[in-house]
Amino acid sequence: MLYQIIEYLAEALCFAFFIYQWIIIIAIFLTWVTPDPYNPIVQWINRITHPLWNWCYQWLPPSLRYFNAYVSLLVVVFLHALIPATLRSINLALQQIQPYSALPMQIAGHAVQGLGIVIYSLLWFGIIILAVWFIMTLVSPSPNNPLVRIAYTLADPLISPIQRYLPRTRVDFSPLVGILIFYLITKYLISPFIGYGALLSAPVHICI
Image (cartoon, rainbow, N blue to C red; front, side, top):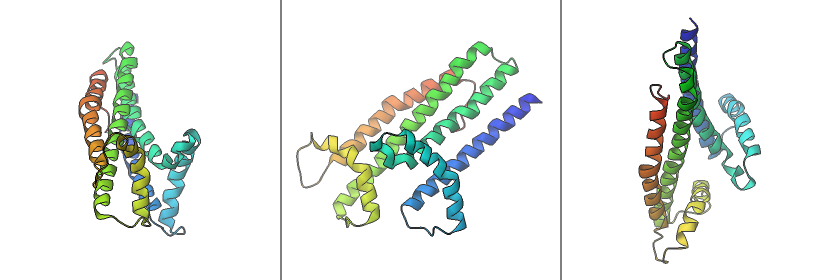
């Protein structure tokens, strides 16, 4: 009976973290527009996301506090990978399917996978931002557009270091160079890192 309860709890947490991730994504999208603050759905979304955003804001250094909403999403992604899988590992030990001595290494594998997925997500988010910014530089959108300002705020820290080493040309190729660098890091460093975590986690699989 206890084993079934732990498995049901792990399954419920998998689903809950998945739903909460999408609620945070919706909340982030709402910050890009001007929603009705009196709308009950908007109020509900803010009520269940802003406490985590505020917690991240307090712990982040001042230079990164602008990104507290995005960091909160990454925190949930990490917990989504770690907590349900950890419960399943403990369940296997309770059922004597695996020894308790295997738990620390297995939980470390869940954490490695969670961290790898967070970094993987960050890199692909950077790739998308750089691709959007490169297209924007070709069409010269209005700098007063709020989406343009958001794209610039996110892209500038990524392309500024690259621009120092590239010759000045009519077309700024630094976003494309950044995309290539991020892709290579993802393919040859982060993907094997996640695979190593999966080996440590076996036979338990993370939710994501």
